[in-house]
Length: 343
Image 1 (cartoon, rainbow, N blue to C red):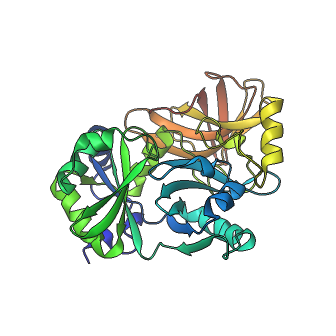
Image 2 (cartoon, one colour; image 1 turned 90 degrees about the horizontal axis):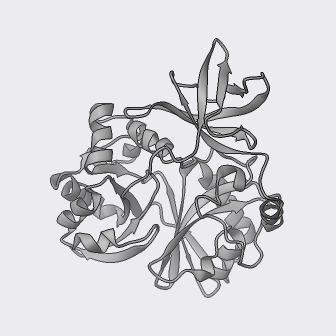
């Protein structure tokens, strides 16, 4: 098997240089192994009802070829995992970030009756190959022999099945890194050929260092860093990320989510920061009058924006406010920015 799809390939930090990989992602087509995400298939007559009862989104409203972003919560409304749900003919493909997978799996085992909704981990039989950037649709179309408009017309999380050389692929449009982007779910045995086809039509392989820069620019929270089991859904901007339905039936954690919604706001939520120097994760934030107002979560240096971060900041701190970030051995100034930095 080529190195490109060997187990653990998705953990490569860089393949070339940050500038060239970033240029591919923002100006061309970036090829990313996304297979560290856990993939689970839910099937059965009550699969939709079961997922709707576990997640913040209205899974029952989905039709085949559509999808959603959602959270799985504790009974107190704290985030166990953030998930993507893709409705297929007869079942649902759900995927979750690697760090959140154990908690989500434990929740499934606890609450899902396999006689009503069968579930199976498909991570060993499917891989996920991502193509991101303004040339992503054209690159995929050329590699797979399909029309680019069919890809460009998809809404977020919309998807379709494709037979490619006898292999069943599923292509989904995803907003995870900002701008145009697609995840291709591919049988593991066909992944090397797919990767080669995409690379041969102009896609540039990109490692997780630059992927993380793009994620932070897009203001997308990562479970285990920006949010965890101590974070409320609205604190992690799930309203803005279209991950909560307020018209569906009951689900785990709904009471807290509804109470926050009708109260008007949470006391803190994720915001952007810009600074003159890269901020360390967990640096403490203080207002100009010295009051503690938050904490840095994800941080990076963007080739176009400079030092940026996602931080948990008090609700009353306005955009453009100047803060001081302090950590053991240093401090610097930072300015509050609305998320996303880039779309």
